[in-house]
Length: 129
Image 1 (tube, rainbow, N blue to C red):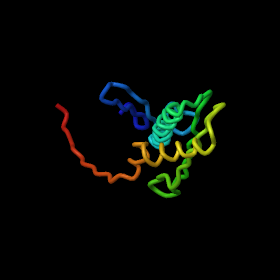
Image 2 (image 1 turned 180 degrees about the vertical axis):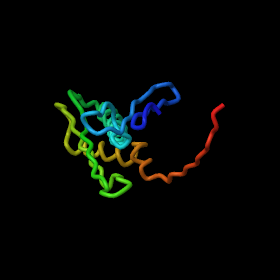
Image 3 (image 1 turned 60 degrees about the vertical axis):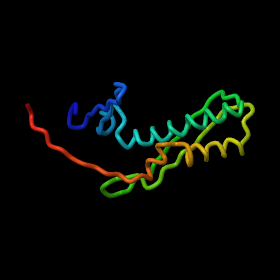
Image 4 (image 1 turned 90 degrees about the vertical axis):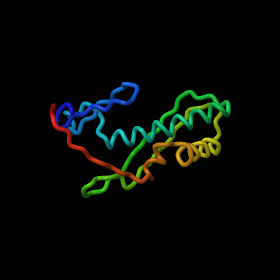
């Protein structure tokens, strides 16, 4: 915890991500819910790009737009998430890219599969030394 609305997450390799819960214009980092959408889009994008390259397609540009609709109550979870994948390519076919996107999201994306997982938790109180 850096402050009441500011946090930092560090993975096993020591890479850090800044997180904050401020409203704009004070926002300096993504919120946890923003990060969830970013993680989903990033995870699915990697597989989609690699599959298109395996098919020897030229990629001039690639991006995914991720939007989520949230529950009005508490908790404000995502009720619906939409990913819109865009590839700029001189030789990609519409049908093949649609198939690659479906495989990426439905079969290979660990983040998408994790959103369906069972969540367990525990807690612990430590005393200052």
